[in-house]
Length: 305
Image (cartoon, rainbow, N blue to C red; front, side):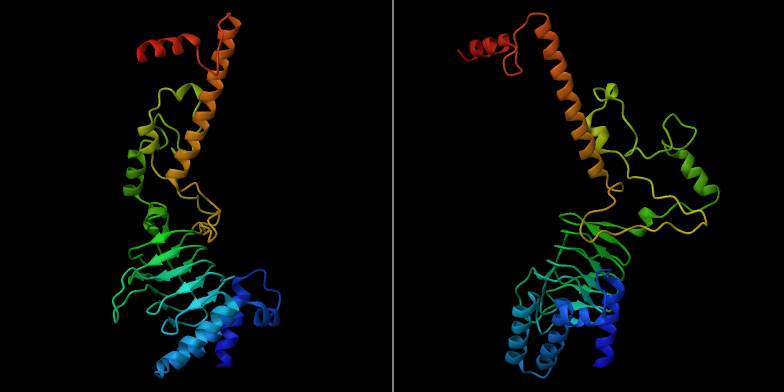
């Protein structure tokens, strides 16, 4: 028991940079308190003392703001950071070394008794703040679930799930191409490879002159590829990709975010053009009312009549 408690305190001290001492973790971390109370409630539940287990977990909910059903199975060195609003269902299973942030729900979508209704998190899974994992499927080892994601299908090991509904990003999508002739041929066949008309930079990151916006349809923007993976370090090591459990961090690998930024810039540029056109018309003696030429209103009235 005490060995397990020391493990829990050590893993929190390692993963939370705000933790300054072990006594602070033992006395001031509701996630740790919720885990300790759940172990007592789960022990009662396994012995068939269902009411006592539910009442113990209810007291833990009142004290910590974290609701864990006594039937849930939680492994070793599980860290519930902040924890307020976390809900873990009866048939949920959490593997060793998982990290769960506040507002997470491990819930079910079916109401039938006696079946697996809640998700299983394998070892090393990180679940970002506000994420909802709903269903009796498995989230693979060392997978990551982004902030506010709604996951309703299995997530492979090592993958990342983001969005609502969540889309799964496999590790192969972010890996650099292998060395050799095949990789060189594949790189040369890409439209943004060096030596072609387009630059080697990612199409989602290229700078678009204002004069080219009118000639670029929205469909072309939506069909742009993903951003290039980060370059390897000088010593040849694989690049480290940061995971933001609070949903704030790198967004250059999300084409939807890039398109939204480009649309916002495009709107601002069009507004500036309209203002310049209105100013030019006013300089020529034309009167502009609320950004509209008066003749347009007259034509509209005649059409209505």
